[in-house]
Every structure is written in C-alpha cells, then in structure tokens.
Amino acid sequence: MKRDSLGRRLPFTILGVLFLAVMVFPVYWMVNASLQANGSAVSSAPFPARVDTSGYQAAFSQQLGNLGTSLIVAIGSVILTLVVAAPAAYALARFGLRGKGIVLLALLIAQMIPGIVIANALYTAFNDLRLLDSYLGLILADASLGIPFAVLIMRAFMLGIPASLVEAARVDGASQFRAFWSIVVPISRNSIITAALFTFLFTWSDFTFALTLTTSDKVRPVTLGIYQYLSGNVQNWGPVMATAVLASIPAIVLLIVAQRYIAAGALGGALK
Amino acid sequence: MTTIDAAAGRSRDLTSLRGAQRPEGRRARRRLGLTQWLFLLPALAYIVLFFGFPIVKNITMSFQDYGTRTFFTGEAPWVGIGNYLEVIRSSLFSTTLINTALFTIGSIVGQFILGLLLALFFRRRFPLAGVLRALLLLPWLLPLIASSAVWKWMLDQDSGVVNQTLLAIHVIPAPIPWLSSPDVALVAVIIVNIWLGIPFNVTILYSGLQDIPGELYEAASLDGATGWKAFRYITWPNLRPVVSVVLVLGVVYTLKVLDIILGLTGGGPANATQTLATSSYHYSFVDFTFGQGAAVSNILIVISLAFSIVYLRLNRRAVDE
Image: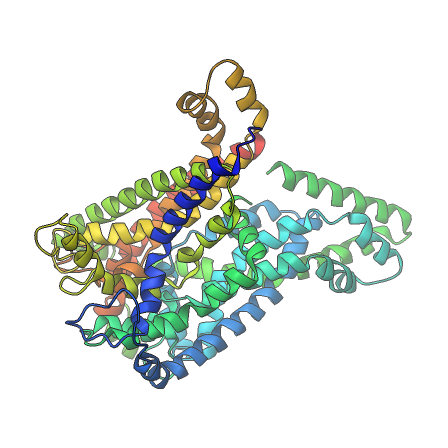
C-alpha cells in the first residue's frame, strides 16, 4: 500500500466533497425552497435569507392526514412483512424442503415484476373484495414490496447460524417454533432490522399502489398528496417542497441513525 | 446456488440422524416435514396471491374486453388477441417502445459510467471517504415522488435553478423548456433518472472493487501496469461479473419506473415521455380499458422477464466462479 502524506490526500477529500455537493444539491434545494415563499414566477433564492414557514404551515394543514396514513400503512406493512418473511427465511435457510430452489427463484423474479402489472390485477380483485380505499388493502399490497427482499436478506444471514445452536434447543425439547422464536430470531436481529428498515422505506415511498388502489381522499398516502400538487399547475412551490421534505424525513433519519443497516441492505438486495 | 445446495444437504443430514435416533422415526419425520412447511406457508400464499395471481389475471384480462362496463355488470367478453392488435396498431405504440428503449439505455449508460467513475474515485484512501460515500446514498433513499417534485421545480423553464444557472454562466442563450417541449422532455427525464441511479451503481460497483485482491495490483505494478493499464487488465476483467449484475438489474428497475415520469411530465408533452409502464397505467387507470392495459403490461413483463433470466444466469455463474 502506498502511504501518501495528508497533503497529497486532502485534494481528494475536496474533490469528494464537490462530487457529493452536486449529488445532494437537489436535496438541499428541496429544503431551501421549502423555507421560502415561492410564487411560480419567482425563483428560489440560493439561501433562505429570511425563513418563511408558510410553506410548512400549508403543508401541515393540507398533508398531516396523508402523512399519518403513510405512517399507518408503512408500519402495518413492516409488521406483516416480518411475520410472513422471517419464518420463511428460516425455512429456506435451514430445512431440506423439496422445491425450495423454486421458491427462491420465484422470490428473485417477484422483485423484478413491474408494480403496474401487479396493480392492474389487484385493482380488479380489490374492487370485488371491497379493499380499494382501505388501509388493509394498501398494507396487503405494500407488503408485497418488502416480502421478497426481506426473505432473501434474512435467509442470507440465517445460513450462517450454526445448526448446532438450534439443535441444542431441540434436544432440550423445544418445538421447532420455540427454537425459531427464542434462538434464531434474537441472533438474526441485525438482518431483521435491515429488512424492517428497507420495507419501511419501500412502503413509505410507495407510489404505484397508492395511485392505483385508492380512488378517493379517504385513504391517501403523502406520496399521492405530492403527486396531486404536481399534476395541477403549481402556483406556489413552498408547500410542495415542504411536503417533499416531510416525506423525506424518514429516509434522512435512517441514513444518519442506521447507516450500517442501510449499507448492508443496499448490497444484500442486489447480490444475495 | 452452491450455497443453497450445501445448506440443503446439511439439514438433510441432520434430519436423517434424528430419524435414526428415534424409534418412531418415519412418522416423526413426516410431522417434522409438515412443521417445516408451515414456516414457509404464509410466504408461499403471498407469492401466489400477490405475484402469481396478478400475472395470470393479466394474461386472462388481456384477452377480454375488460373495461368500465365490467365493473358494473361483471361481463368481460373474450376478444382473442383483439387488445394486442389494438395496442400495437395504435400510433402511440411505436413511440412508446422507442421511448422505453431510449429511456432505459440512456439511464443505464449514464448511471453506470458515472457510478463506475465515482466508485473508482472512492477506492482511493482519503480523509472522510467513508462518510462522503455513505451520504451519497441519500438520493436513492428519498421517495421517488419527492425527488420528482424538487426536480420539477429545478427544471422549471422560467424560474428553475437549472436554467437560471446555465443562463448566468452563458452556457445557453435562452431558457430550455426542459419538461414542456417534446424535443427535450425525454432527455430531462433521463437526466433525473441517472441522478437517481448513481448511488445504487456506486454502492454495488464499489463493493465489487473492494473484492479485487490488492496483490493483483501490486504484482501488476511490478510489471509496469499502472493507471489505465491496471484498469484494463485487472480491474475490468475482475469486475465483469458485478458489472453484468448491475447492468441487468438497472434495466429491470428502469423498465418499472412510473413515479418519476408521472411526477415530472405525466407521460407528456405529446406523449414524448410515454413508456410501456406509463402507457399501461394510462390504458388501465385513466381510460379504464383494463384489457388493453393488461396487454401492454404483458409486453412489459415479457421484456422484464427476458432480462431477469439473463440476470439469474449471470448471478449463478458469478457464484459458481
């Protein structure tokens, strides 16, 4: 390995900061514009010299309910995803089930099916089952965004759990399920958290199902609230940007607080 | 795939061991098998209901006159390949297909090249490299529709910061109608999608680069291969499996894109940014002709699946190697 002096390495840091600045500029602009009163004919100033919170006031009064809806749907989907995916991940990692190769293949392919294809069919089914415009309908549909990913990433981790650990519990008389719950789940904590975080991000950001499986204002996630702003002629970008910032907060918080889980998930999703 | 087989073999051994120890071996084993399937059952049900059913339903719907009337009367008469003919003969279809190809190729090429350059850059050791690389993920984690919103404002013809900046530094003589002119709208949408895809590409390619043993470079530098030569003869050949995976996944993900296009342009102006995915949405959920929407969906899914199969083959080879 070459050992460069700090003086020779520092220019790279500066260059790196520049690259990053270009990449996150839109995020900065979102926050910046959300703090200004932007008539459609007036450009945003580079800095919010005089902070104007009217955008946020409008966003809160118009979108608070939608943010709540997004939260309910996302949390519901995360719980459903984990309940369905964790045991399946364990079964696919540990049991010698016939045909599990096919199940794994189906999960890989499922991740690649375009959402609009699923939405087409679900709309007709949900219409018959009266699940359109319902929390339950969106939770069920959104969990499909998380389950294949969650199974694959948790399975990849569970493959590494020594079989002897579980066997020991089984010899002590624990049922399969007890052994799973009291040994496998605690050990797999990190991969479960990764699966949960990503499922939350997927479902919180969901647009396709929100757009197609709701027909009224009754159950309306915030992504659809933003879309409604955009599909009209935007007169004032303040509230739109403020809503976009509010909708982005979970991602920003998770990136800062749960960095290592995010990195693990970003890689696991693609290569496992 | 090798790991799967190894794991399967391991647990099969354990199962037979256990069976031998117990007198009521066979029945216990069958009960065990049943419990094992119970672990998998909810996920199987989910796959069938939320992935299997939609695919089958899309196929049947695509051969039916499935529209507004169907939702009132329940009738959906069979029309054979009528929906496909109507969709393909529509003047929109070739536009949609070309847009989809341009959008996908443009996005992938841009994301990959910029992603690879950034990944190579971040392989150097310098202060804050880790933090900067981590923050780079931010655009990828934001809800796509929130990103679309800010880009729509940034690309605004009269007041957007992009035109303001380009005008100020005299790169362009007049404001570019990024999202309102059929000539440049697709380019604008591609630029936004490239921006969105860079973090994913950097992350995967960077981890691929980390897996290339440092000794290879040391050995090569003794032979005088550094810089471009080192990239050409060491980095690229060793990175190839990862590159294939990134490219194929990129194509599959780009074919799906709905949020960005609907948010930025709604498929317009004059269908200049209409892709197979947005077109399927329009047929089904704007015109309420689900039969035709399903036909477009099926064309989309055939293309996606073709790439998925390529991905799975590459993935298997990458694991085996």
